[in-house]
Image (cartoon, rainbow, N blue to C red; front, top):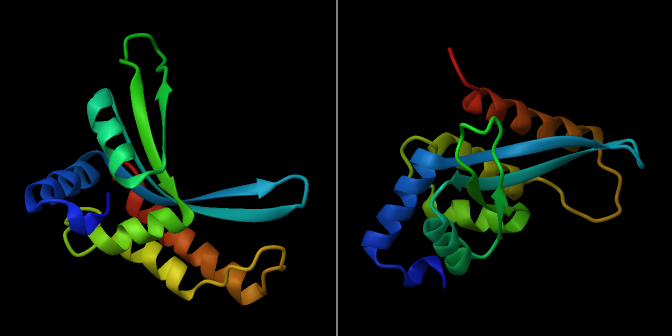
Length: 146
């Protein structure tokens, strides 16, 4: 199902889930085999209610999994995630409705609209700097605490 086929009520519900329980970010990891850094845009929702996670997966695709929490006093959770191109397309549909995570969605969209994505091609210094800048801005918006 696509965003256009959802009712206004369903769209509002999904926006509330993303704004309240969701995460929009850019991950960063170093590939040991190549020595390069990889940036991964992602949207994620993690909660104890399987039915909502299943609804997100059936509606938009992506992936979902069961996460066992520790310490044992915490409930286990389900997680839905969408990354790279899927996260970009999803953000383009929801950015104008978000309130809390609007800036994160804008950065993810900027990352895709202005980045260079060619498999097997070494990134230029300008591209590396652009990706790092998007990553740091996103990290600042998503940090916890004061």
